[in-house]
Image 1 (cartoon, rainbow, N blue to C red):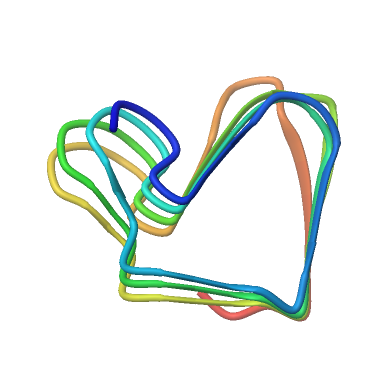
Image 2 (image 1 turned 45 degrees about the vertical axis):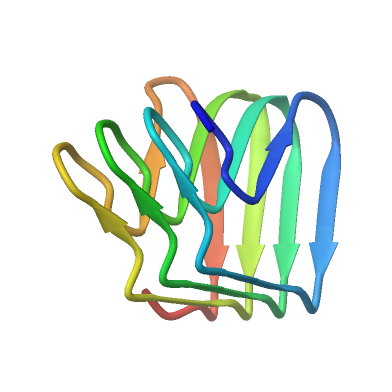
Length: 102
């Protein structure tokens, strides 16, 4: 899969108490690829997600207006060749992170 191995979304997305584990993508967002819109990630876990030739092993946020990660845990996410093993936030994207572990 090119982008968003676990979730690919354009628009509003709220994920509450979910686990995204062992997903993979080639170019961006092993666990989540969020393009535009808003994402709220609440009390969730992203673990062991991988991107093999790009950015954002756990997640890649691009074009989003304002997003929030709250009370979530990110561990062992990997970007094999570029930046953002856990999370890659593209230029111009605002993400509020509260009470989370990376």
